[in-house]
Length: 216
Image (tube, rainbow, N blue to C red):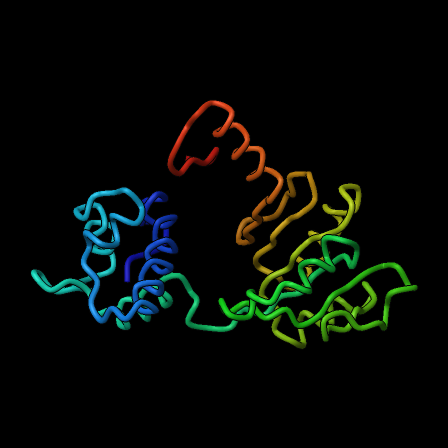
């Protein structure tokens, strides 16, 4: 498989869309899927689909298309979804509680194993079957439980400090719900939800369509 850095960014962003469409087609009873069908769902040409998937070898067969279940398995492996990603939530306020109560993360391979908060009044309580722990226990827990991802759901003034604690503990990916840009070291990925929302507002307000990113 080619190095992740060698794959064009637009291709990487489309892979998850291909996966969702392939899963939808399987739910509808499909056993094979053509590049035209995948492309039609996203309003792109079948040739672009073949070019995107061609970065990862010969997945389909000319004139036949892609074997549906094999395509899903391959896309999940490419996206790193063929494994369970262990995650923690930091912040047990309104946003943190909403995250903990959302059932679909586990279905996509993201397993939230604990939540942390500095408010001693909530530490030790249980929310959606997940124990809320003290911040002091975060480093050891992340290390001992092989946690990969951290979801930051704290007030803006605490977000950077929390991110640094997560990184120091060994977390390699952060999803940030606080309205601020986090500074993380090389080797750690941070996704900023509020920045994505602002990008979306920019796109809609100008009547732009299709995929758009400030990072493009």
